[in-house]
Amino acid sequence: MGEESSQQKDEEIVRQIQSGKIGLFAVLINRYEDKIKRYSRKFLSDHEDINDVLQDIFIKVYKNIRSFDTKRKFSSWLYRIAHNELINTLKKRKKKTLSLFDLDILFPQSANDSSNSLNQQIDRKDMEKIIDKCIDQVELKYREPIILYYFGGLNYREIADVMQIPISTVGIRIKRGKEIMRSIFEKSGYNL
Image (cartoon, rainbow, N blue to C red; front, side, top):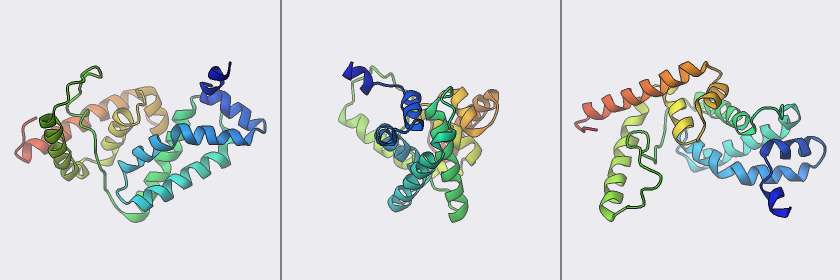
């Protein structure tokens, strides 16, 4: 039974928080802090900015948790708050920085592929640097769904909820974003 409680669904934990068990909020922070931090790194490069925004995100979640509808998915709601906070931060600072540390966008690899030689790691590091230099040329409306899908692990319906756009638009923007990225790389003299 103890193991089952450690695997409680987010929405059940939120119900308990809403009924007064405020201490359980730490469980949600533990589950999502690293994910939201990784997500934030896709928008912001400054470590202090990320920590400040992360704190602001969880404060907003805490303040608004009573209004969360537990029939919905908590992670989508949390990512929506994070999304809004990050966009507001970008607007305030007029930055368009994005660090991309995973190449699955352009080079999907099998999750079962455990062969990761030193050469592959070096090639991957070089490619990450190239992507970092080019990614800021991708318009934010295409960049966001790519980040949510590939780095946030959200599905199209969840992304549509976070971005408040139709599901079909999510698919179109991801496809178009990937095409733009491919074009940028090709113009840079790289073939993907």
